[in-house]
Image 1 (cartoon, one colour):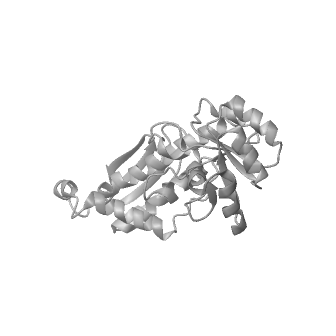
Image 2: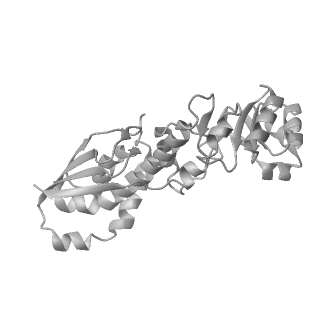
Length: 279
């Protein structure tokens, strides 16, 4: 999986993270470590994980200044075992120490997202269903977190409000109903998905020309019955309270997609360690 860090948003995020942490200077490192001392550091997995974001390391060290040699031993999307070295860095000890926390924060957070995404994907293996991420991301980190979700095997849903039409319950309320919302959206010529919460809304959406339905907060049994009724007239996404414990049951309903905000809003940061030795 290609983890593309070339987008200007990503460099801006990295620079902001460094500025937030370093401020006017790393006082501890400057007091304790002689200038010019060289060191070797290793990023080590402390638990099994799906890796994401390791490609950010060159960006972090470059943005912080100084000449650092970087050897990436794994790529985003790799399954990594406990104890494996993810990357090695060599250069000025002060620079390695100053960048340590920012580098780890990115690696731990993004690998946590990728690991959880992979767990969702694993539990739907053998079905036609694909796992989608959502817009429930950390402000400012959406592009990175969506790349991490993709590294774990999830499919990226819309990046923002600007690149897809998704009519949700509050849009329906504001428009005056399912049909009214569809009548306004469909003529725009964009692909349209609409959230439906009852059998009646499903019927209204299909009658109104909807070709993609988002079944929100149905039980697996209810979703299976509705998918049988829909009978291929629209693609179906299931959302709302889907967990690792329930995702397999939802995938077995015949749904085309399952979206889960938990992949990004509830992913646990994985345990990655940085070990430094003087050269």
